[in-house]
Amino acid sequence: MTSVIGDLSIALSEEQGMLLDVARGFVADKAPIDVVRGQLETASGFDTQIWDDMVSLGWTGIALPERVGGSAMGMGSVVPVVESLGEGLLGTPLINTTLAGQLLLRAASSDAEPWLQRIAEGSIATVALLDSGDWGASNTLTEIADDGVLRGRKVMVGDALVADIFLVLCQQGGLPALAVVERGALSDRALTANTLIDLTKRSANVDFTGVKAALICSGDALVAALRDFRLLGALLIAAEATGSAARCLKVLVDYLKTRKQFGKLIGSYQALKHPTVDIYCGMEDSRSFIYHAATVLSDEPLSHDAEVACRMAKAQATDVMSFAGDRSVQFHGGIGFTWDCDSTLFIRRAQWSAQAFGDAIHHRKRLGELLLGD
Image: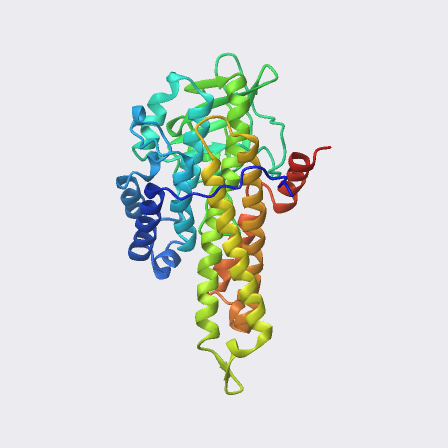
């Protein structure tokens, strides 16, 4: 029987394997859980020294071309790094900066190269996408005039409080446009911090009214780039959630092997064994999906197979992370609901991952159309 999915290939290149090993070692050395917890209530949510170390490793330029200071390794090579960061529950601006770089690279001409070079060198960038909390909304209310002055506000702009470069989705003459805005063009009053369920993440609402763009991108390339941006965002969130599910599983297994009730290890009870195995199987399935997607990605506009892969990865990864986070709380009992237990970090990460760049239902609806037709 022929698969409706098409390309089923999975390959991990030598370079990607090396990145995975380096990233896992980096997280283990630089960001043990006490370090992560130490940043949960800070304004930025991350340690600037850790970010500088990541920049020095070249992670902000992995998928950017060599002409702007990148490594030209492609978006597939970002997946193992993000998976490792997810396993460490480490909150940094890497996902938002990487996605902003890809959107600008795919949407713009050579005029954008100075900003791409800054991103490769470690400037934090973000995309101001949403006019409301609906990740599936396709319209934008923010407008830009012919003189480059913006009018409108964006919500849930990731890492906005620390971003150096904003890419603002807007419309010009009824057509989509992308405005590049420097942080210096915004007043502090223009940013209002959000309170997020995942305390390792940061975002803010940003009022761009009256701000002049440094560069405006438009045209067919932008339309294709926006589509790719949403799919790549879904994939990176899936990679992060897969890593977080692996970390959650490890914590659960350690707990099941040490906690006793009625004189027996709780891991001996089938009611706990079976869900744990389900988490393991789901996590391994999720890893297969994200690395399949990493295999079929290219620097060209994403193909049909790549779109299918990204959507399948997002649906699977966030489902298993939600299940793992829920079971972690339940297995730990009363302490699982407390601040001191890491279960609260897992279930919060699960809630964030489930919604960012569209939930599982959203992506499965699109998969139905892609795989089965009308």
